[in-house]
Length: 214
Image 1 (cartoon, rainbow, N blue to C red):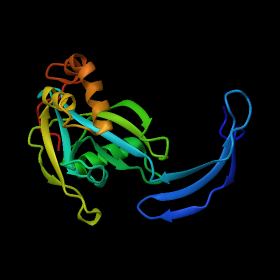
Image 2: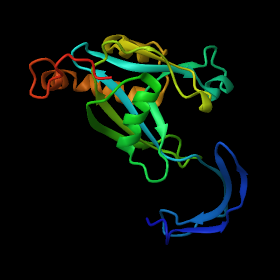
Image 3: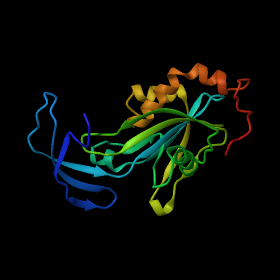
Image 4: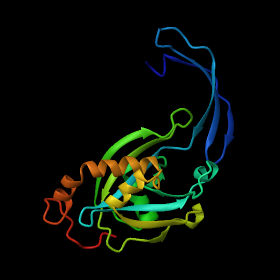
């Protein structure tokens, strides 16, 4: 189906424009049987697209995760709304997803990425959000990484944590890690762990020398 010929917009007023932009969209769309749907009324939230990255140190076999307060987890009733996540940031006009991944790794975790490996792209919640995430694995030297990071003017208070990959994977199974982009990235890294370590670990063709990449 085609977004231009198979979707009819009846009205699209903006009802809120702040941290996110909310539009009230009234539309009809082409049905699978070739006919047209009845009028559908939906709220659509726009807040930009996102670059997310899971820094991975193949020598330490560890990832760099960030821990921060999340209003959605708080509003959802989580007893601990400080979530363990992948590094991520909103892509501004004129920026590339790769550049944002590198910038956010430094801003949120004090971590420089050497190689950036694309994992996937997906919609966070396509029933209401326009937000699309591009997820990467970032090869890094995590020695010396840690501490509190973030930008004061954005209200960020972010703790960077170097976490053994097995411990992070156990966090998924145990329910400690609930961030979708982190789960996607961790499972991708786990499935390719041996090849990543052979390629980027000591002695590998693209191995990290052991100097701190910060």
